[in-house]
Image 1: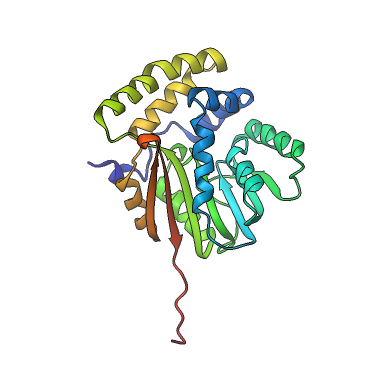
Image 2 (image 1 turned 90 degrees about the horizontal axis):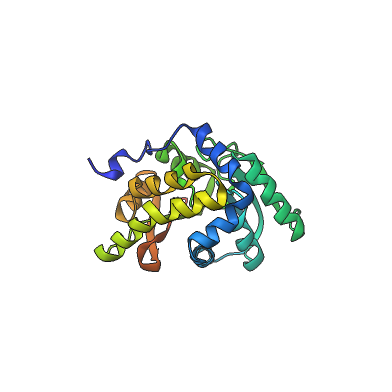
Length: 251
């Protein structure tokens, strides 16, 4: 059975266990991301802005926003976004994010709230863009989450998903998997004091669908013009797709 056929129920622990894990490592989460990715996470998050819709006054929703790294980068560096809402289930991560936003005086443009990527408590057709970075593999039901993203997007809106993937080159993939299975959990455990969090990371990366398989999931959830951009030899990938544009019946 292919990964795409099983991905509607991702191989994740119980939901409360996942967000409690992120709460435990919230204080060192940003530092660990930068160290363990050798600074590549910053470059990857920058790439997301290249795929924003080419129009002004965008209202953006960032799911699994965590400490707000993706959201803050976009808001600081792209004037197409007028305001944004970030949702996450991990309270401690949101606390860190709010402190960062206060330091940058961005509270009037960004709102952070507790919220669930599988049950987005927002109205239909509300957002111009929905983003989720390194979070889609943590949801229990991927298709449910993607359908929710489609629901809250305005017609013609865009979903942007940044997620880990596996390199196509066999040698690079083996080196990458060795790092993920052995080096990353050891270093992450020492710095964060939570070995489980980084063993969990490599398991989810290895089992989650990527590339064409994930694009197929987006199409199943009624996104159009679906495409992807592999980053750093395929270690991460940006996926994007648009919600159905309304049909003009006057033509």
